[in-house]
Image 1 (cartoon, rainbow, N blue to C red):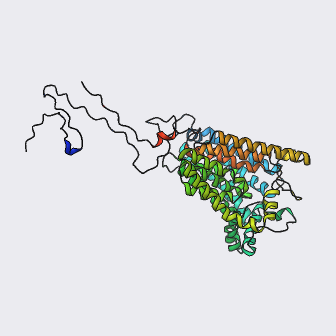
Image 2 (tube, rainbow, N blue to C red):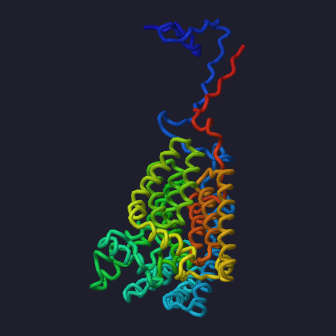
Length: 476
């Protein structure tokens, strides 16, 4: 069949096509067809789009391309040398100032390892120096002292408390001693913490293998590392394989290495809080609720993470996902805590609430010279002032949270870190080691997301609207 249509003239569309037919133009006045502008790629129908960040461009550069981005800063040789020097000085101070044998042993072993890591950073080529130094630091500051202490059954009292709570839970149904006499009889943790002591109860300590595998510190560390890896995968802008090096550097840092080697009871809480903020940013509602429930059933200090993560989901995705996450978290946490709270309310209040606040006859051994501890040392008046300042600080963070809800995992982690830092600093009893939780909350999400600031998303109505196709000008 021969077509009579003039080349370049658009085909007329009639009633059968569902569109109006355009009036035919004279062949002489026919203008060349204008190419239709390419349609911008939009989201497929039925998929939830992660909020675009304010300040992003249509053609962004590669992640970490800013001059002072976390990825670029972490790759500088001078930063590696400075980190190794600070870590070596930090570790070398423990044999001189600490009165705890386990901490002195860690400092004695870790300080030469940090110095050797710094020497490797200085001498080896750039492409090999970072990985080799991180491997040496992990071996000398984490694995070797941990093996020495675990094989000899040496640890801080927190590890013994967790392992005993698991044994009590299996035999009596409660992880708490009903009538504590000495300070090690107190269990300041919520019932879920006893899970990390179950390997010791099941495996025992008959040989070196079970002595190491049953150690609660191993399971603290594995939970911590697993949660940080999952957080990295959720927040990373590109699917690269550069996870192990920053995780090794963070683990080998004195901030984490000392806690992991001698006790490590706070490490699961750190990892779970980081993972909860990443899941909340990615709209994993059910997973966020379950992870928050785990955090809230480990220690009462994790409870501020619940409103922060819920408000993050509400700010990004709306009221229903936030309500679903909150109900999941509260419901699952009550399933764990409520049986003990109903059967032994006095024991739970005495050991989990009053003992960490220094309100019991036997005081907690946590005694770093933080402002709250110093105030509490002046007697009942100083103790009351410390609790009043703690309450005021918590109220200020709550007002901040309601006035400026977080809009990204970085913003949520910063807000949670600020609240926990205030709580640990002003509490009547606390340790410098507790500050590892807010420090990792500030550092790790930024390393994973490869940016310093928490950029705000565009308003919600713009997030779900499909991009419009520009209309070509009509020729007269």
